[in-house]
Length: 148
Length: 146
Image (cartoon, rainbow over all chains, first blue to last red; front, side, top):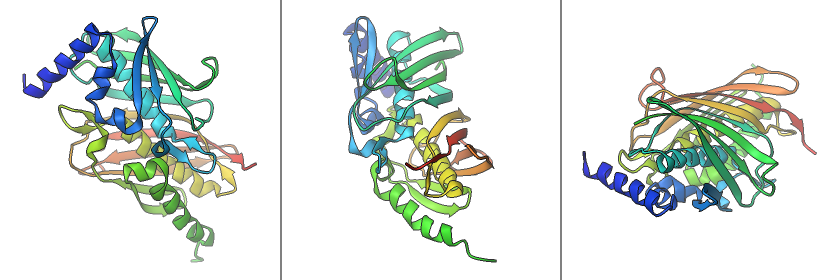
C-alpha cells in the first residue's frame, strides 16, 4: 500500500473514532471548492453547503448551479459511504441520477444520505437536499458506487 | 444559407454568462462551440477540484457541473432567451476515471425539443471522443419567463 492510501485510511479511521466526518472532507479539495461541511446530529450525518458566490448558476435569479447541487449530493454520498462503512479509499461512482424538485435559492443548503444497500461489489446511496424545510426537498439523488 | 441572427446575438451573451459569472467562472470553463441545439465546453484541469487525493483525479461533481452546464446551454439555444429551462433531472454514467492534469472536453446535443420538455444528451471525454469518461441524459422544462 502506498503512502497516500495509508494516510487516507488513517484519516477515515480517525473520522469514525472521533465521530467527525468533516475530517474526510478536509482531505478532498473539491469539498472546500464548493464549501461543504459535515457534522453528526442525533447519530446521522448532516451535510451543509455554504452560501458561496462561486456556486451560482443563474445570476439573474440568483440560484445555485444545478451541477453544484449534484456535486454536493455526490460528495455527501461518497463521504457517507466512507464514514459509515469500512471503506479505505474514495469509492468510484458508477452512475448518478438527480431529480431537481425546486430551484436552489442562494442560501445555505442541507443534505442527508442513507446507504440503502452495501453489497460486495456495489453500494447504493440515496440522498436528499433541502433549504428551509426538510419536507420541501430541493433535489433528490441516488448513486451507485463500486466498492474499492 | 441565411445567417442565424438570433444565434449570433445569443452566442456572446451565453459565453459571457457561463464563463465570467458564478460557478462557470470558478471552474474556469470555456464554451468552445455554440450552435442551435449543440454546445461544446472545455475544462482545463484544476487542483482545487480534486476529488480523490490519492489519484488527484477531479471530483465527479465537476463532471456533473460540466454536463449540466453544457446540456443547459444546448437547451437554451433551442428555446431562446424568453424562456427559462430549469433542469428536471440528470442521469450520469461514469465509464472510466478521468486522468489528472488533462483537460476535459464536454459536448451536449438536444435530441428532442417538444412544447414543454427538452431532451438532451451529453458526453465527456479526454483523449478521444470514442472513449468517453461519462455520458449523461438530461431533461429540461420549458417555462415562459415571468
